[in-house]
Length: 189
Image 1 (spheres, rainbow, N blue to C red):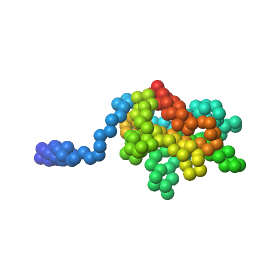
Image 2 (cartoon, helix red, strand yellow):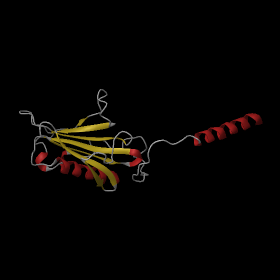
Image 3 (cartoon, rainbow, N blue to C red):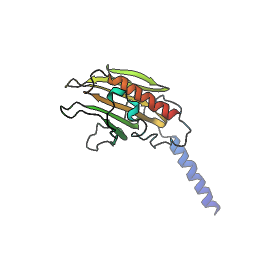
Image 4 (tube, rainbow, N blue to C red):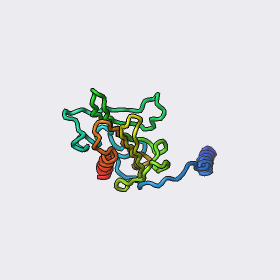
């Protein structure tokens, strides 16, 4: 019996030592200190993307006249460029002629979603104590768009993507900034 205990102890020590000898790969990313709030456990969604914001959080001029429920929008497995883990679409499109107004609220992993400026169009951002990056663009049809991504706890990222071809007087980056601030306020409260 004593020999079995000794072998088990040696196996534990060898396992720990072997694990410590493994190199750590990747690059260090600065971020906020992880929260101790039990609802934000590592690997779990820190929010429901269909409930963290509502149409009431959007500017009045872009809100639908009738209540349009946001639609759960998980990533499409056929679209490898969709790197988020979960999302929700807020659509207030004009159908005839088609003029899009679509916001996608997402969350995912910092290993898949970039939050640091890497391109000339990228603008570093801070939402509360959360660092991020914003990219404005105009598509081939002249429709304005804006995407922002920012850090959350435990290596997670939140983001908002907005395409606005319906309300030319509304800056899509101001809309995503307002929504990002709401998300940070609600998560940090």
